[in-house]
Image (spheres, rainbow, N blue to C red):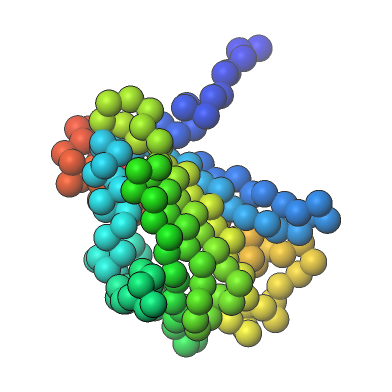
Length: 185
């Protein structure tokens, strides 16, 4: 029998990888996604923190408007959803030196949700992105469909992580001019 060695790098060569973190009681805690991007870390950071442009390249983002309140960076998002769209505001704390962006819901839908982006240079011109999504309290329709295993919450977080990582990767690699199939993922 042929043994196949599957490493994280092997998986990431094919696109984003997402895992689920659970609480001690087995309930959903977070979806943690990783992606490798063929672009320098500063370029990835610039695209990531250009929140007002998300509606241009992230699927289902209908609006992403940047505002400030009490000196804090806030982004008003509108996400296309079945039924009424999901509307919420995220306040971000940015650490450009460490390449970390932390967001928390401060208004609208998704009460109690948080997100975290971390960037790491893996080689010159290559960046690993770690995205943690702890989105909660979706529409009343979706909440009514939730089960004890939190299938809906986990599924929406995993789907959002994949969508965000793919969109960021594609935008960075297309704009940076990454060669070959990496630019298509």
